[in-house]
Image (cartoon, rainbow, N blue to C red; front, side, top):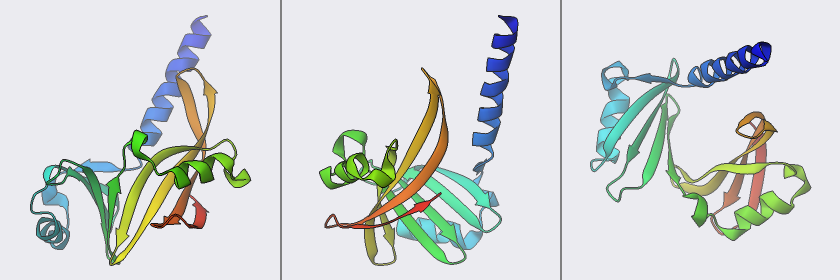
Length: 160
């Protein structure tokens, strides 16, 4: 019994550390001034902004826009990419149906769905995951990014 408890705690801590290393929370002063200025120009109504460093040249800011929606913007040397998150109960039917009935996504479920805007190109992007485990302790064993046109046509899927 003691071994089971110790093993469970170690697995939990390992999973927590791995998740925390994906994005490092930082203060706005640690972000490239150009990206901060771009963010303030693009989102003057933003509130509750939280910045993350994804790697040396890529930053993410999560915030609420003027309408109270959850939004993220990725800033890199190549430009910016905006994600407008869609709540679980509001996923379009074509996204749910494609994930549920396409054999390429068997065993996957929608983790996040957002409207993705890069320059003037607007698409839906779903992050789908496959999980294994039991009860509350399930870990990701696979993740894909699935892209759709706004009209509903499937574009592509890539492994994450």
